[in-house]
Image (cartoon, rainbow, N blue to C red; front, top):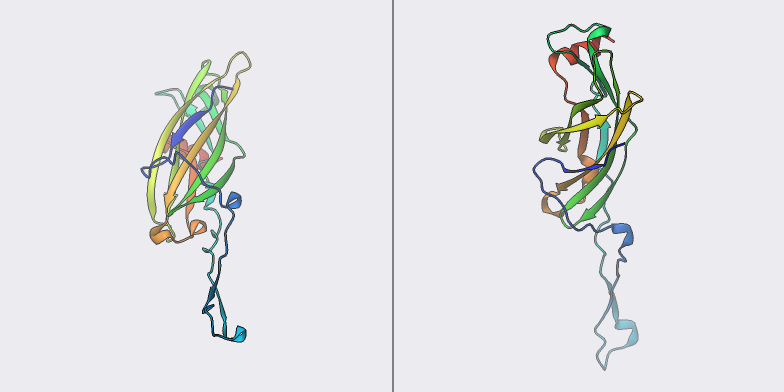
Length: 198
């Protein structure tokens, strides 16, 4: 396994310091009004200040159907088994989100597993994408990354891509669960057609 990569997804910027809401203590102040002399105790009013609303969940992260695997072929060759240079698969990812002021930050560990093919060598480069969708499924940003897997003597290998995405939340609204993140291999038309035929 090679060293993990650190990427900033999209054009929203990297969040250098993260605040976890679970680690924050929310203080509830009690303000006693009209405590001056000459007033009866029964006339005193207790005013409660509401704490800020808690975050409402993490963005949904999923692998785009049909883009979870890739088969690479020798240039100029067909899609027969003898022309396969490498195969790749996105493994089971894990992630979490934290809230900061006016944003939600998603940390994602994305494993990519590869294997060499009959026409392949000892390494292969894999292109994958990360896209952010807004509350109405409108594409807010997409970035393509490249990672290389060394197959060594076994013909197999894997890398763990460590990704971080900061998604701004308009007007400080805690609506992270209304956003989605899609990941998948960036497929050529030939590779997409091959996947659809499987």
